[in-house]
Image (cartoon, rainbow, N blue to C red; front, side, top):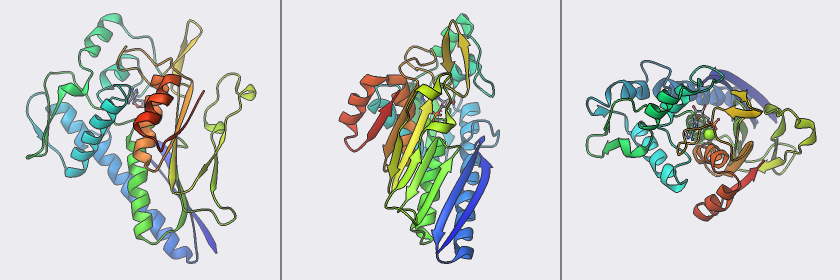
Amino acid sequence: MQIVQVARNAMATRFEIVLNGSNATMLRAAGEEALDEIARLESQLSLYRSTSEIARVNARAAFEPVRVTPLVFSLLKHARDLNVQCNGAFDVTIAPLVRCWGFMGGTGQPADPEQLAEARQCIGMSHVHFDDERYTIRFDREGVMLDLGAIGKGYAIDRAVDLLRDAGIESALVHGGTSTVYGIGKPLDNEVWNVAVANAFKPPDSDSIKLPTITLTDEALSVSAIWGRSFEKEGKTLGHVIDPRTGEPCQGAQLATVISKSATDSDALSTALLVLGPEGQIKLKHTFPELRTFIL
Ligand code: AMP
Ligand code: MG
């Protein structure tokens, strides 16, 4: 048996794939093709790439309907469904608030109250209109802006996993920036993939906190946390995940993990769970009975 590892920087993070199988050349080719797909999706989905479909929608959709590819159209519709299923805690129209709090390319700063009030007017999927015949997106006011930062990596991992399976891969681990990881099949030496949550996220007193090791088989794990891109204010850590309902950096939990069959959903729902806090576990379990969740 051979083990091949491939990696690439994309979506402002590092994607890595470990592949197991009998033919190293085939494993490497399949891994590189999956990474190509992730890079391609970045060029389609990133709000920071001026030529991406999302950047085009953000620039034009307040003035005219903007046609997008079926892929982007259905991903945005899925994001709308998740928004409803999470009571508004996950919302891809979050971008004006992300900018207000200094998290668009930065590590955050207190928001100006006037700008915050203005930004809050632009939040909500009700501002985003879908034309199912023409595959167009339209905003009903200026200032609306989409940010797929909480779902894009998971979506890219799902598409990468599809390609790996199509190439005949039966054992692989794929992760993006350690925040979403998918285990295909099982590793060579075990019945499940064991994934430790701990090391990417370091709260100040991390030594005293026990984070779980999660087992995955044909499943995805996503972690969202307030550490990382964050700043301190009045003894509180204010992170880059924002509660769309209050306009403030979320305080419901410090870290949330979701395990799901879909990396797209685990990515979006771990962000939602961080916003919703402990009550969110019951709410999400009710809507998605198959989910496993952990919250700190
Ligand atoms: P994640 O690390 O997957 O939890 O995603 C966090 C990123 O998603 C942030 O850096 C923002 O770009 C964006 N974001 C922040 N808050 C929300 C929210 N409530 N719903 C959707 N996206 C969000
Ligand atoms: Mg997420």
